[in-house]
Length: 209
Image (cartoon, rainbow, N blue to C red; front, top):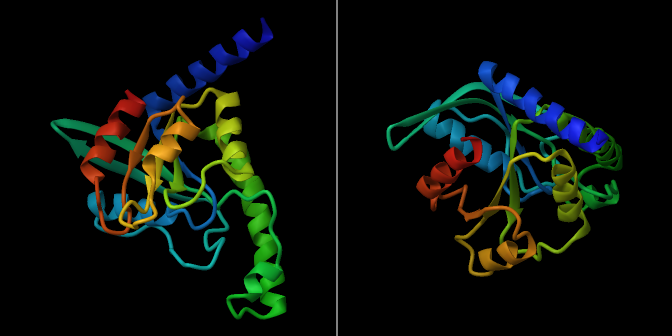
């Protein structure tokens, strides 16, 4: 009974927020391409980028929001606040950053900020009306980080679209991600080069209908 009441409350809260401003969160592990996708969306519809992308893990360590993003597709229009979140990780070791020629002091500070970013990302899940989960299509989706992300979303009954990124690379395998998470729609894209972005926007409209 309590679960049903909570589900209704969550649904009602999201419905109420939609009347004001939809919040679309971008989640995923580090370096899957979350910020690259956020930048592509904002570049397409606002003419400006949103976040800094980098090959160094945990470049995004704070919640970044871009308000009033208006997407138009096949005569339809969708307005939302886009939220780019720090990459989710189950373990953050400062020594991993030393590989990128960072000083021990900077590496420890980055690890501290990244850990806080992960905590903030999970907290912000309660604010999201729907979520894009960006996964690297060249990597095995069956890992603890991805299961943690999907598990948190499933517990909140949040609408999810899985974005299998980096389909421009030979090792990409969208079907493997579809098999890993059959409960959610999956769309393969290259956020960097814009592959399949029309299909992505079409799926986005389905997500928030």
